[in-house]
Each structure stands twice: as C-alpha cells, then as structure tokens.
Image (cartoon, rainbow over all chains, first blue to last red):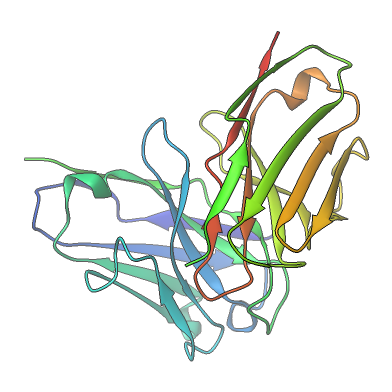
Length: 122
Length: 107
C-alpha cells in the first residue's frame, strides 16, 4: 500500500526555522518526483516546491524562493522541506505528494499525505 | 509563471444536476491539466489527469475536457458524495499552479 506521511510541523516564531519530513512507503521512491503543497486554514491549495526523482531538477513558488529548500534522501525514502525565515503567511497545512508516473516531470499527483500543520506566530 | 483562473468560486446545485467547472490557463498547457476533489479535513484526491484521463476508481459521472488554455470538469449527475471543493492544477512547467477552487454546495 502506498503511503506518504508528513511530520515536523508545529508552532514556530516568525523569523525562525522548521524542517518538515515526509516518509514514503509502498512504491519505489527514487523513481518518482515529489512535491510539497500547502493550504492555509480555510484557503485554497498552493504549490510550494517540487523535486525530481534524482534531485536533478528543483522548483519553488516565488512566495518561498530563497527561504525554503526541498531535498530528498532516496536511501531513506524521505522528502524534506527546510523552511527558514518563516512568516505569518507561511501558516498552513503542508502536504507531501507523489507523482502518478515515474521518471517524468509531466505527472499529476496521485497520493498525498494527511498534512502537517505549521503555525507561525509569536 | 502560469496563472490558472477557475470559475465559479462557489456553485449551488441539487442532487442529479449536471455541473460544469471551468479552468483557464494564462498560456497553453495542453494536456497537462489535473482536477482534484477535496473534502473538509482531508487531503486532495486526484480525479482526472492529462485533461481527460479518469483515474482508477473515480466514478464515470466525472469527465474532463479541453485543450490549449481552456478546460472543463463536468459531473453529469451530482451525487451526495460529490459536495466538495474542486481544484484544477497545471503541471506543464517546473512551477505548478492551482486554480482558486470551486466549492460545490447543496442548493
């Protein structure tokens, strides 16, 4: 069974850092691009960042560029999001998502975790 | 970056109604358009990819169409389980974008 499970959320003060993790199972992790998507409470979905299967291609939303860093450790079936200089507007549920098709950037996301809540507040 | 404009933002409908949601991209994205359904407190669920490919297990009352910049999600006969929020997403570029969402409410 395919599973992706996020962790690492919590309450953090503005300007501080937080690292999210996503552990995957049930599929060959290093064959698939992975993504982070966030959703502020009561708001819509916002794509945050993507990383290809071999970490060769990485992309960020303008809203997080220069502050967030996506990475993966294929040996540990894990995806990460290092979030620095956090702002109140970064408060959201953060979802990890897996692509449907392996070895391509052109794929929608068929499996999502349940999300981890990041609250940025003093 | 590619902008996605989804309409309407809210839709009130009755069980059995035919429902149509539209999504317009700021540039051509064919066929890299997906539709997701999200219920409160849950993760999004992929319904349709590549504009018109129904995902396994998704009821056939859902269909997607369109090309270029204009795309449509249609629910042929709305069922009680379909009341939810729907999002389009383009994945034609390294930077992915979602539409603003359409909440389908009970009329």
